[in-house]
Image 1 (cartoon, rainbow, N blue to C red):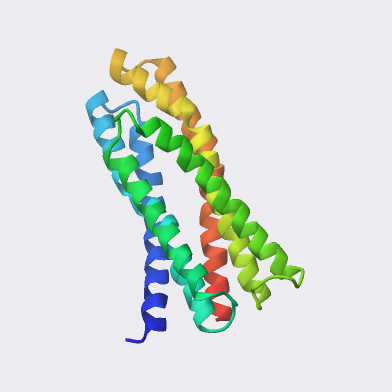
Image 2 (tube, rainbow, N blue to C red):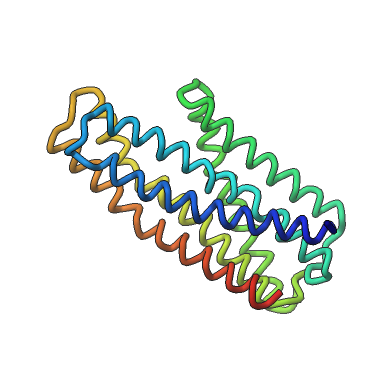
Length: 220
């Protein structure tokens, strides 16, 4: 298998597991919000939901590097090899941060790391938009407009992920209340409200994944 085909396979696998994991997370959330289930059953559903959600989180961190590497290898992006190497290191560091935040949940340092992760993603969004925007105006390194649009869509999906994080607070508060005091109308309302607030962002991520897949399939 050539380097290009390996990169293409990785890029496709990250797309599949991102979308599939998002669908699984979305489905599991319905059981977390189901007030006909016991607190323990709902807690188990949340554990499943958070585990499945690691797939999309991992794929978001890793999908960018092989995509850009393919574009560099085919001449669609002009970039020095050292910069491409830096992008790989950044994506791997992003992956490490995702894994640490998941497996070290509750540790004293996770709060500050979560805040750093939020700022890091803002930098990723700004970098993608700058890189794509300068290319669309004729002053950047990307030679194909559709590739710039793919990068903009990716930045939008990262932004949607941050939107989910910000809007999920009622869900977190409601679930914590349920586990401490037992299910109540108030805790159920908070859980349902939190999930309702994040659904538009989830739908936008699905649309973004399908748009970028269409770009890649039809224009490469």
